[in-house]
Image (spheres, rainbow, N blue to C red):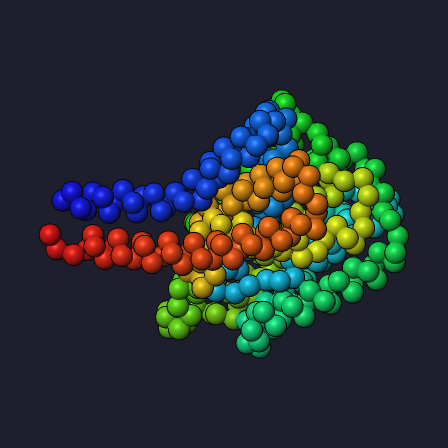
Length: 328
């Protein structure tokens, strides 16, 4: 009995590993520079985590299904340019957002069609899409620097309501809606089932090709929404706003949050904690004087460490669960 209690305790500890990592990193960074935990910096960390969290939730759904989307980084740049061009040409905010979502949906349908219907590996399809998107972004931008002065979109990025940044309110609302979609609808249930076993899911009558198309469309819409949130906080939009750095952020956040790259496993809460960890690291390392180029090195190293940790955690949980199932 005592042994079972010990196993249950350590299983709970492993379940809360992402949260414990966030706490440890906060303590360590605060010990290096106490300014990290003051009100202003904590609010900035939350604001920076807002678009990352939406992007990461899109990546969560893709990874849970057993796939991967390498196009999200440059998808950010394309959606941002579309918003910038629309606003620069006198378009209303609603129109700019609509065009960004339409473009994002088109990218998702492109990826989902080739992956779901033509059965081409996700890595190949999204790598090709990444290159195509990069070219389209440069073509749409035409080398111009787009100045964003629209007050409506600025109110989202830098405005506040009752002292709370509007971008956090928007992110919280979207997170609730995404959580309902993932946890309370057939879309979410089928996504987890697909990642656990494609063969078993197909036997139950789930249209695998359509489900994969929906998954990549969802990821691309999340990418477009994250781009809109990012544009709302900047004054100038260029094709450089997107890039592989954001793809790394999304994947790192999900993996740190406990999502398995093999599919079938991942949580919304863990992904959000992962997004906070990424934002905390980026903000803190920038304050410590680490260059932007070096940040990608740290993110890459974190992905490798997170994969090693994920493998270790899964093995440890397996041993603990096996021990709990054994008769006393």
